[in-house]
Length: 422
Ligand code: NAP
Image (cartoon, rainbow, N blue to C red):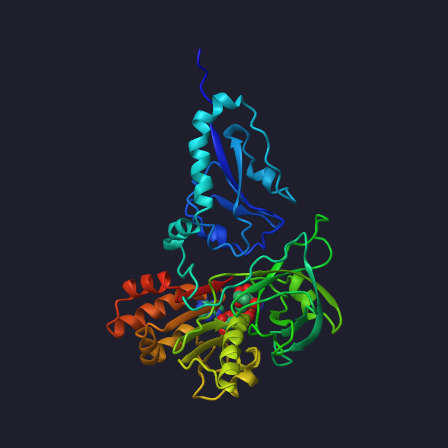
């Protein structure tokens, strides 16, 4: 008598120790298999079809975990929500001789997909608006040098407010020094901060991700330090009072305090390095961090007589001039180095203006950049700006006879259109 073989699956799991809760996987998943609570991001084995769309966008690799399981023994989402670490691989609860005939093909399929990042990248490509490839001339990044099990200690070398006093936006420029511990970064990468203490359930706080705001040779050139742009969170997205755990911790740090850091993260939101490459940068609020890093990289290179040339154009949105991080230093950059267009949304007596409005007003210059294949576009800031910016690019293209659908696809494939929004 032949009993039916139990189904064996390759169960897709997210490592709670590495995950920085950036929500990218949940946004990318085409079948809504990924959900989260205040503690963990989890994958529903009944919904996951192993399409791999979520794997390339994950900045940490925490998404890329698999366990060979009997389907009937697959970990439920409820169980995953309680985890502090991934369970180890368990032995299958069936006689191997019976199960493997059915099991191996499916398991092998998932494993080979997991080991084929290019295939995975193309599987997810249609689901995200930007590139999963770096520019061809990007420098090679180091990623995941430090995780939750081996965080690195950095010392606060400075903590300065970069928005005017008396405004609601208390945004800080924080400098972290790594001493002699390696923490190599590139412009556009991010890191994770592990806030001290525990959450309401008595568990360690999970890591919070921040973009690096300095160029690769250090916040101070030649020093092993990085800078972050951190806005103190005192209300949630609906305007209800809430005290952001990591942002308040970071904004209150004093010079000499120490911080636990993981990372670096990010291997596609990177700048081009070839001669003549243009940067079109679009950001809101603290999303300016990577734009500052890239701009400062180009400024230093130019000052040293080694500049790449190329055009730099920045659209920068904030509520008011007083709430725009780095307003003073930005206005001191020469016009022949960077073309800056501010968009303020809450200036009393003036209509609301967003970055996408400013892009439409400067359509001629944006179109001229889009027509140049040396142009690389970076968008960073609020999640909500993503659609608006894409629509503005589409409209600018349309009014200048550019086939946006074709150009959009090409820019994504060529690592020339990047989004980092939360
Ligand atoms: P914010 O002050 O809340 O907003 C900045 C500007 O964006 C305001 O003028 C705002 O206008 C405008 N805005 C709101 N909705 C928009 C939309 N749909 N399209 C275009 N503009 C829009 O910004 P923030 O608090 O600094 O937040 C910045 C975001 O960047 C956060 O979501 C943060 O997570 C993210 N981010 C931060 C970092 C970092 O390293 N710190 C890195 C990457 C991303 P109104 O509010 O007046 O409508």
